[in-house]
Image (cartoon, rainbow, N blue to C red):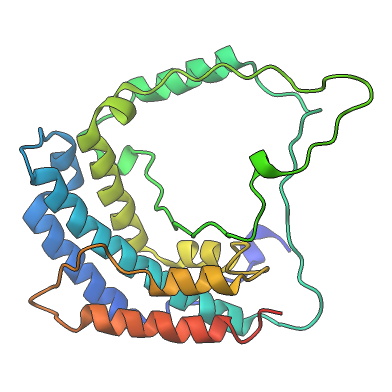
Length: 249
């Protein structure tokens, strides 16, 4: 199907909760500062903790609403027939750009970073899906010795780090705020990405879904202007948890 003929993603199923969460985010930003301002800060003792704590609460609530949207998308999709799981394989035989050229492109992007324009940053909201405890870690997986000798390629050189992204803690926190602003502005693409995530979408892991739905902030930070917001969003996550666990076989 051509790209222009593909159906648009369905609208959010919980618009009132999204609007209330956006209002909470605006109050948080009014208290801690916009992303561009955060990026320019030099943290005083205790300042970083207060900023991160408030952002973390909004992030957790946003993920719970995304889970509710993902459950709604899953309910609309046909559940009959085998599930198709897409696994990305390492393309060792394909040509890749030399590391030096890739490093040069990374450095050029780092030089072009403008801390005063958060809309130009590379800021992607983290879905933070818990690791599946049933999966075998690579370092513990069984090894098969090749009969034709060692096949491991030498480790690739580390790319040149971006000075802002690695040395400025304020910028990393500001980037989290900018990513949060983007997901609140348009949650549909993120909900679709979560709905297609392997452990929550096509190959559902009950343990992962439960941990994702019930995760709570380390320290509760309430909203005096909307004290029921956290409870209402947790309720939406619990309902999504039940919908997704209906078919996990």
